Structure formats: C-alpha cells, structure tokens
Image (cartoon, helix red, strand yellow):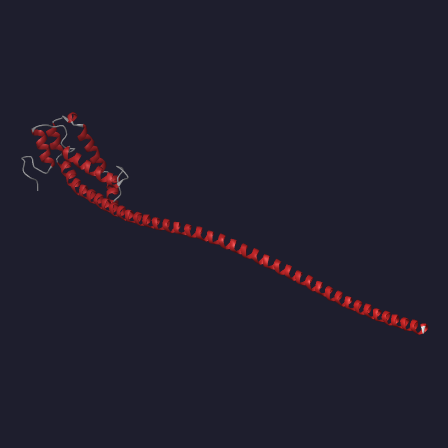
Length: 240
C-alpha cells in the first residue's frame, strides 16, 4: 500500500512538473511574442517619431520660407512705393519743365518778332536817311560856294556839336557805311538792335538841330545858308 501511494505521489508530481514545464514554455512563448510586439511597436513609434520630426522640420522650413517671402514682398512693396513716389516727382518736374519750355518758346517767339520789327525799323530808318541825305548832299555840294561866302571866313566859330554831326554825316556817306545800310546790317554804334535804333534817332535829331552846313554863322548869313541848304535860291525862292 505504501509503495502504491508513493508511486501515485511520484506520478502526480511528474504530471505537475510536466504541466509546469508546459506552462513555463507557454509563458516564454508569450513573453517572446510580447517582446516582439513591443519591439515592433517601438520601431513603429521610432519611425513615426522620425516622420513627425521630418514633417516638423519641413513645416518649419515652409514657415521660414513663407516668412522670407513675406519679407521680400514687403521690401519689394516698399521699393515699389519709393519708385512710384520718385516717378511722381519726376512727372511733376517734367510738367514744370514743359511749362517753362513753353514759356521760353513764347518768349523766344516774342523776341524774334521784336528783333524782326527792330530790324525792319532799322532798315526803314536807314533807307529813309539814305533817301533824305543824298539830296541834301547834292544840294550842299551845289551851294558850297554860297555857303563859303555866307560864312565869310568864320568857320572857327562852328560849334562842337555841328562838327561832330558833320563827321557823322561824312561817315554815313562813306562806302563802308553805305554797304552796311544796303545789306541791312547794324553799324558799329551798338550790337543791340534797340540801341542801334536809338542811336539812329539821336543822330537824326542831332543833324536836324545842328546841320553840318549851318556852321557857326549867325543872323542873316545863317538864315541864308540854311535856306540855301534846304533848296532855296539866293533870293529866297524855292528851288525846283
């Protein structure tokens, strides 16, 4: 009886050991499976973290690129506004210069018109003086003996203004002055047209006040010489 009980106990322990071994093997298998699952999960998590980091880096790079693009756009907008302001100022300057140019053109046209008018007046005065002085020259040359007799040798009493007017008349009858008048050029009085006209008028007034043939004679002799110079005869009658 004791032997059978010991054998049964030994068999029971053997079964228990076999069941324990199977349980240990199953536990090891489960543990290995869990470890594999954990490793795979860790690998997947690492991959996901890497992907997330890459995505974060890409997002940061995109944000940086967007910020840089916005900065460049702001700088370009500022430059564009500066250029637009500069273009506006240049347009205003161009408008002002165009107005000034138009004023200068009008002033130039007015000056050209004034110069043409002065040249026409100078030519007319020169022609009138030429037509007026040629008969006077002929009359003076024809009445020179009568003038000498009327003056009676008192040529030293001639006024300086009359002598100056005579010299001017001689210069006006010189071939050089005659060529200048015929060509319409300004004599050497002044280069300015207006001053030239004033010079001609002053010379004409000087000649009318102090004719060169009047000399320094006074009284009856002076009146007679003046009458003779104007074309009168010896008896006071008008010449033909």
